Image 1: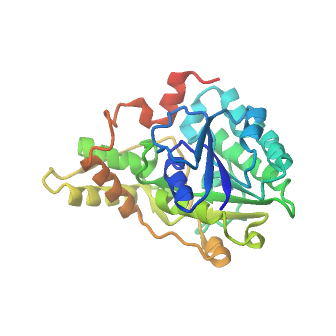
Image 2: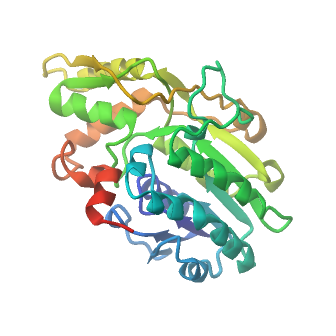
Length: 334
């Protein structure tokens, strides 16, 4: 049994991850700014929820008391969020990171730090397989700061503190704290509500991973042999598809789930988003023996069934709570 602190634990991935940690017997401390509330977390006797900003190092250090592992996910996440105040992006996703690592090391009890980066650090590449050694080509501040934090984390690697970085692909699928600003989720939302999928560009390559798989990985990393994790970077993805292919998959699955509806149309338009890359996750399978189990089709089907079950209050096309950048803008976070 471990005591695990999860930064960003009330977010999209956190609300899927935390129940898995509790089911495994861990004690969990969620440290989250609660920009989107904590309704996605179910109260539990081994769950402590702390409303805190990761820029508040003293409060973070206090929340760490007795913890022997950290899963760090907190960030102003996804590229459009960086259309916000640039200083917010810089301070929350980069400048506070070394003080956070210093506090983690100084706690004296933390044995494992799981740093959640992003495969978007690769930016754009026409390489057939982008490995962990591929140069980082940041196209946005989000990409840049995620990449800059990785070597900082490894500065604190020691015999007492195991540090590992995962670079997950774009996550998709259902969460109690839902996001409809991620590619597969957006396409499914529009197919269900509008019967029309708008594709911006279409030829861009995008890697994806199911939310259940990536949260399984973070949970499993708590007990994997430290000698296999220490100082390592791992891509974590499953299927590499073009946006056009993602749209066709979504059209097919939503059509199967709602056969009574008219056929779904796909409309294509131009885009100013050049991000395009394919990642390979061979290393994580070879070293850790880990591979994802769920497909993009599974993610779309899960979302369709959540729609059928009425799990999304409000209008998922217009409600700002489902879109990170709109929520942060509305809250006026500084």
